[in-house]
Image (cartoon, rainbow, N blue to C red; front, side, top):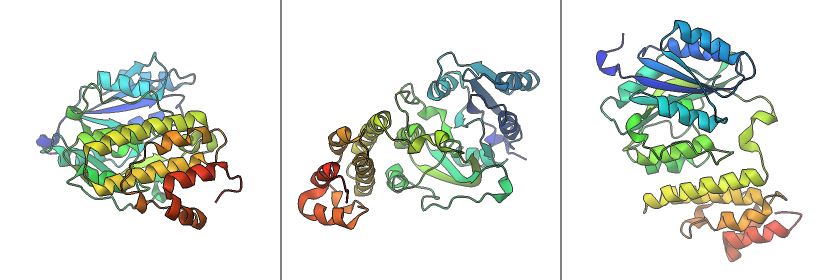
Length: 323
């Protein structure tokens, strides 16, 4: 049983759009959590299928489920609307097809009970239909961090945690910590980077959050390219730079940030529609710690030794064969 000291109210915010195939299972998973003191705020994002009626029927028989209609369409608007209504001491975000181990919230609340300004993440695993076949993604940052900058330095080197792997204290959710509605990519990475930068430390929980793997290219938004995509990435990098500047001096997080900038700049040199934004991306790279950037091709590594990273990428932009 759950000790009384862990019975803090947890607000679970779930944007829902045309999720009739999965929303009932996700809600059942929330309601079966061993930490029972929860409110589940389902923000219907103008669904055109049976999602709204499914949630409405559940909400009528289960007081912990609250259905809210989102009049300003969009998943980030829906999450912000959920934050406006949330009453919990802790906040968790789920998508309408996510699942969790049944003791995930209990374990995360226990880790935060004496740390009201810490954040906690968990292990996570991809799944399609069969949870028993999923295995947790093993990452070097699956551990606690006393310094959030140390965590971001490792996170930005190719690691990730889906939104429902996190539990965040409401104390960190100040009026300016909302989901960025101007972004079309990496909205969760940008939001949680800002939350993490405000935390005292980052804790880790060994229970698992299950992330349903996107099916098909249309659902894999993070891989899209084009003018809108790179504009979104530039906005994210600007916010990351503000975070990095707040952690100065911290060489590891500076290096990881510069690697993020390089990755976006390198991608831009391969895209006709993104090339014109290359200089905007490169302007965000800090002068320090560029020598540690991982450059994918030998010719480009050779060129950067004499011309530097910025000049080499600017040249690559105009060479059709690439290098």
